[in-house]
Length: 247
Image (cartoon, rainbow, N blue to C red; front, side, top):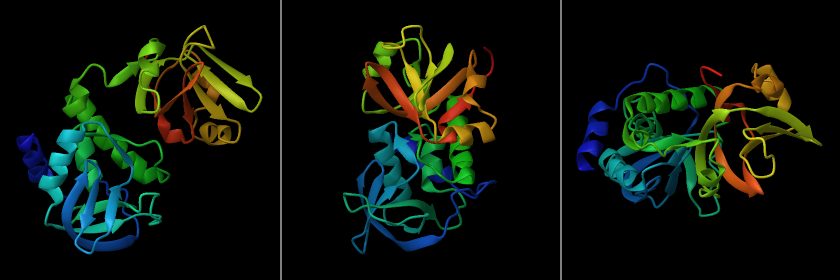
């Protein structure tokens, strides 16, 4: 675990594509690591790393400690409104680095890119960092269970309330009222499905991902698993969906 954390420190440096380079929200020295995605500055502010979901809590916390403890950071973001726990969401940058700490955790398979990144350039940068770890089977990507199979609804339901990545082939696309369903099984009430609200559809169409065009395509989706009879993930942003090769 320590070796992994030190390796991250060794490789942190300027990135080719900055991404997430928002306006500065503040600066400070890291006084303590609170958990796998939060730290406290020496002035008492608590910061939550935005744009990621933690995949390996123990190793991510160790990596954060090796990366940040006792070091000065610059906080960047689009909104510094504290969450309900009083934590300031931000992208944390070390001096002389164009890649936020989030990117380093992603590159080493210790985190997953979140589904709530509104900025396209930031989402692209973090997804690229995650893809690097996935290709190298680093960290959590070395485990067969990290990506759920859309044909195994029971396995997906076991993660209800958790952030999950699911892959599979869309068997059918149906609309019911103001909701479009991407169905991955023939039993619509029990099998896995992805939902897209009518108000979000234009964004998918503009990105060349019109829901109907996804029929018989293999896709990867990410988000929070809900139980509505069968397991469901609601798509709120285009970045939650990736096209995969093959049908």
